[in-house]
Length: 120
Image (cartoon, rainbow, N blue to C red):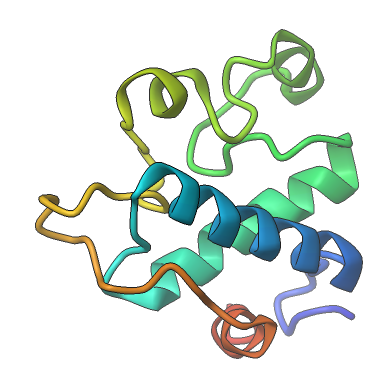
């Protein structure tokens, strides 16, 4: 499916895989999605697109000169090293409860993700 600006959306398979991963990881680490679920939706869509294009969920919130090399290095593959080591998520996907932007949710539906990402 293409969006109005011509960019390809993530496949349903990768989107569902990244949605499930995100929910499971949030619960396992005691973190929460952003209070603004549109941020969560865009990040999960970005992870899924990278999974489709690169074979790995490379952090979508950073610039890379060579995405394939970054996937191989694995530092920024989600969950990235800063998240695994210090619970620091640059994307605001996994937020600790004391973070001012943390919501109360550890769940999001594919429909919620598509409703947000279909707008971009």
